[in-house]
Image 1 (cartoon, rainbow, N blue to C red):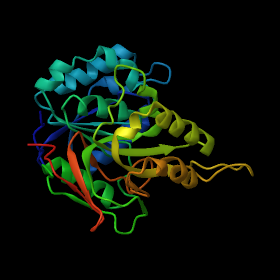
Image 2: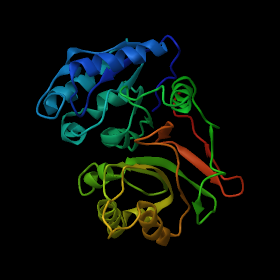
Image 3: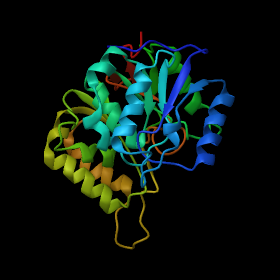
Length: 301
């Protein structure tokens, strides 16, 4: 099941499946997105507040379902992350989404939805949120636009300047996103199946000992052993002021190297800029000779 490619005239639906925001912040970032040239559609539900959530679980799920049902909406980009997407999964009707597949994009807490859809044969896109700052760099916006407008089979990510451990060819379906969110899905009916995958991992505002704990959980579960390779994105503000700590890069290397699979460091995606867009639920091939990752399957039709 594939969504249709978008055009410059397409209408983008905006929703908030996770955290809430101040009304002025919401309006400012939506206007910024419109200034880029996009048409948008959203409901008043985006302004809802329920504790730290953008409305209760049922109402957020209802808004998401309606975005997929809305014939005027051709693609969906989430406003922000935060927390809460996992709470509304029981209220989603996947059969309806499968009948109305669309471009669906976000990152951070949206990792839950991206992978739930992708592993049910609905490709999604790990990429910017509406609340992203598209003035920070040119690549964040240009790669987002590329994947919105293009099926993207044959798209190339060049990693010749990246540190690559266990450099060898790999092929698999792209999955993953935020490390802590991936771990929160484990042991639930929605946990990620890592078999024959190339796993994206990124994180923000977690001290090295927390990264250690999360990686240990993944490794001890042994599910990650089924990965074909790992792309490591931004680990933003994942540092410690303590004299007794590891560097996050040191942890990532020491813990993941034992898997014996290709690990590519410093891939520009996640909670910093550039934040490149990656299609999830589609196959990709990495060439150890050229150090390039090539998308080998169309995410859109």
